[in-house]
Length: 94
Image (spheres, rainbow, N blue to C red):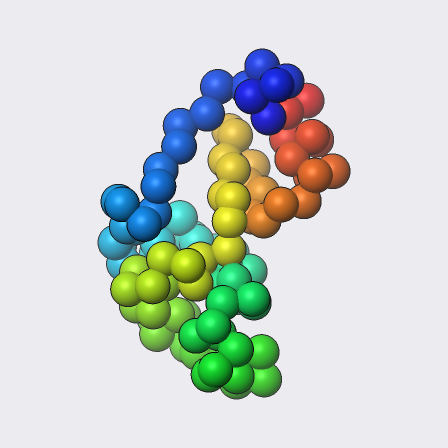
């Protein structure tokens, strides 16, 4: 994205975690399950695909285990792309 001239504000979640309040605000009215990293060990161990946690439990878990958050999360204006969807990210830059 930087190669295309985008200015990015980056946050290293391993060094500066998102709080439960920040996650709740970030997710907003979106389906919170879109924010869960389906390749994360905790996700797999808990069988979250078949039995997803409640929204509040998912937020609590993501705040405590940042690798459970699907990345990148890119926001531009009112639009958001979650995950490494190259086509969606390119459209976001237009």
